[in-house]
Length: 136
Image (cartoon, rainbow, N blue to C red; front, side, top):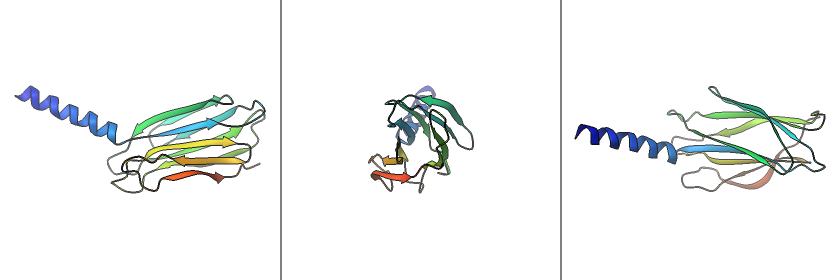
């Protein structure tokens, strides 16, 4: 019976982590065969730097911490000289009941766009819109 209880406890942790997982997708929608440089970080993790070729994307997923304070910051730079850039909050949760969802960022010639997937228990979902301009 003890083994069965341990199994159920571990299974519930796996299911809870899957349900409460969140993610960030960075897509390179730039033109003229430009690469996109990206680096993201949280209090505990650093992702990148990575080069994303034109027409491709990079996604990563993570769990929301117990206190619902998970936050990722990202910096994107346009190639080939990487002089146009933008640094921003790429992910944050809004409350203990927010599961985060997938924050889909798209780098385009005129700026950085966001669409936040409409998932179960995702607060403040948004349709695709321009969130930031590039900084020169």
